[in-house]
Image 1 (cartoon, rainbow, N blue to C red):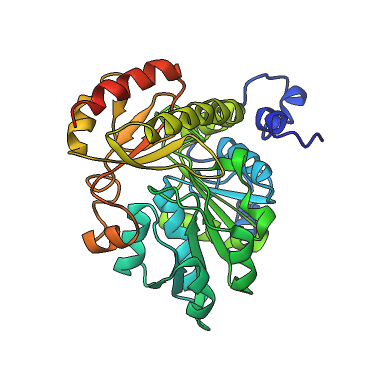
Image 2 (tube, one colour):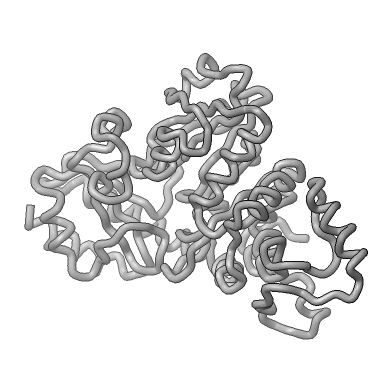
Length: 372
């Protein structure tokens, strides 16, 4: 099979459609699946409970769904893993990864700030029985303990777009799995598994869906971790709805085109923002991508309120350009001191470039910057 990402993005999860005699992937909305073989169903449930992957026909929607399975296989293929496990949201995926570590008796997590605000809060609160040590990338090795179950990093990071050398970090993790949140980069720009990450996580709500109309999360990993995550998903019920799986699979087919186009726009905006007198600093990753963060001289809330074409809203990765003030929304739940220490200043604005014409977007930003 070809190794070109654009080709795989179109065909992953759909390789059997011609043999089925259909062009679009089937949408299976069933919550339960009939069977006259109760004894056979019991044997399959026992196998699943022991960590096996459910073979044959589905049993129940909380165990698995054919449409969701297609999305999981496709995302795993794009990330270079054998398995994917989808969840109802990105935070459901994060929660399952933490619970997997706890279930193995490894409740300690080493994490690098900044992370998405709710990921930060979940770790800091210890709600799932974890204990967190926050460390700079070069201090991760010293923070590891015998009960460390995960090293958790997001790169480029939300919202400062700070980058971490994944290969260098994986090298110091040893036997401890490195979990990389790859939501901002997507497999178009970065495949952390190639650099040693053992678990790759996405808020599929963002670029994978790409249209602001579907919520989900997904983890790419090996067979052993996938088995644990499926058991946790079955027990906790954080399943992805089949319609969401259908939309996410469809979203993957245009992912390379959307990310590439939005990244070109973001690079242009970053360059122009850096030259604007009302902007004191621009954060744009060396990796590139559709996200730009910048700090302003003046009231950032005035800028948010002044945009007219750009959408003032939380989230990112949609076809329309979104702008938000992280200190007020996505990272509000993080303690103010911790936000500041992670580089999330009160002057920081985060922009997710969409697919509009770059000149129209710049015109809107220019007029909004006057409100400062």
